[in-house]
Image (tube, rainbow, N blue to C red):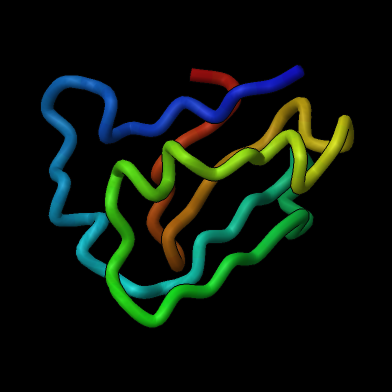
Length: 78
């Protein structure tokens, strides 16, 4: 079981980073793309928290990083 911790849950994170409709990209430990989710409107913290990454990725993503476009927004290692 894994859990992605998002930077917006940490004190001092600039939430304006979420004001984008760039795709959410999940990358594995060797920078391979495991999942890409696209959205027409900007993301919200609530929407990102609600994604069941384990159901989408299974056990292959026990270590991964989350990006909105090229902006790093979270990791299983935080």
